[in-house]
Amino acid sequence: LEEQVALIGALPQEKVMEYYLKSWVFCLPCVTTSDDNHDGLPNVIVEAMATGLPVVTTDNAGQVELIEDEKHGFLVSQYSPVEIADAIQKMCTDFETWKIIQYQARKRIEDDFDSQKTNEPLFDLLKNANKISV
Image (cartoon, rainbow, N blue to C red; front, side):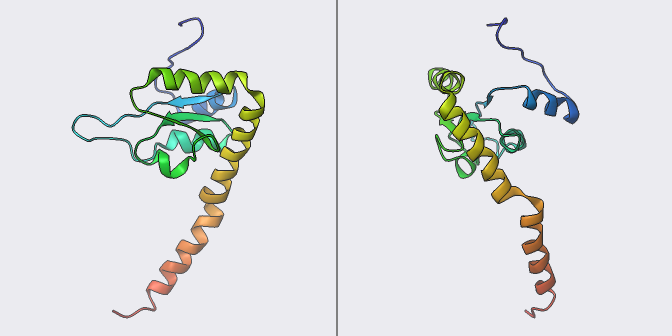
């Protein structure tokens, strides 16, 4: 596997972008621990989708709110290496599905995470909050 997969470790943000842009699929198998600790919505998933990179991740926590399975990426069961491998393999062998998910992933981020679209309603809410008496 070492010839096919590189575990790079921590990188500065500008280097992370280089890896997104030369990658074919992004995989982050998050888990809920025995003490019920888990990620909320990992920023790296949003970043990967913003670059048009199909995502394979687990169906726990915030990922299920962001990704519709097989539309914006793949949601697999926690602790299921076979499901993870199958989803990665599908992204590497089914170019039509890869193109659709790549497009839908990017569109999802553009539609719901674009700061110009999300900041204006927030600013309006804050402006109007000063006008409301309690």
